[in-house]
Image 1 (cartoon, helix red, strand yellow):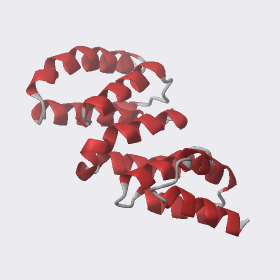
Image 2 (image 1 turned 30 degrees about the vertical axis):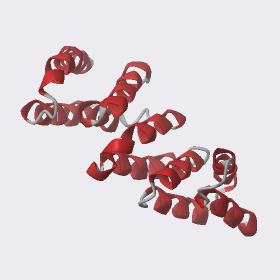
Image 3 (image 1 turned 180 degrees about the vertical axis):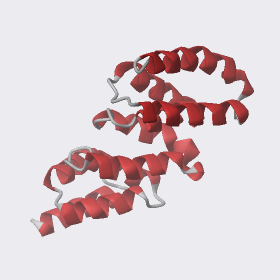
Length: 173
């Protein structure tokens, strides 16, 4: 089993491998604790394509929260801004119901593709919301309002975010 897992790791790290997605999926289905740790290290690595394949493999495992911690860390790392969209896209393979604040942050601060995908998740996923979740989201919203990267998008986001936050607050009033 370990030999097969190692062989799959070698295949997903090979830039010439045409079927890397297939092997990533297979690796995810076979992954044990040790393989999970290696995959998370690949997610944190410098090669964004290998990191993406590691995310894909992790999406086939039962380690949802640990995988998401590493993926969101990758997404929020400024040096990955140009690859953000790919990492946000792979999120659709995970259970995001406890990750409202992270998805919301991607919506606010992500590049165009990442932000657009995050908005789709915000609109389509049933999130677990608590007063604490709302407080954290409001903190990020206020930070965004005072530090917008793109002045032109502030009004658009305001028209979407303010009603969303209001509706969430009303759940607890």
